[in-house]
Image (cartoon, rainbow, N blue to C red; front, side, top):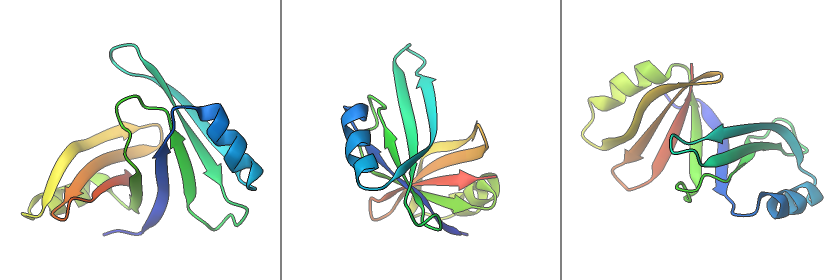
Length: 121
């Protein structure tokens, strides 16, 4: 079911400072998404590429409530993966599948406490 590591997402309270550091380490900004929470608070996601373009990305997030490191795993079909994993007793769903700009996302917590963001079609 898991195809590959899509990215690791890190929280930052100071996007400019984090970008200055990581861009200085040779990374390049690949994309940026500005979003607004339902309560009106803005937040931003910035995807960074490593010099080796075959690598997964590093993503910075300023989400005010999500401060943990997120490991994002690429799957072919988020809905089908959700259906299969929902039958297991060792997975807790923190977010059922929902649409994003290019595909779908679901967030699961494994029995060992690790959280995975599933991203794909």
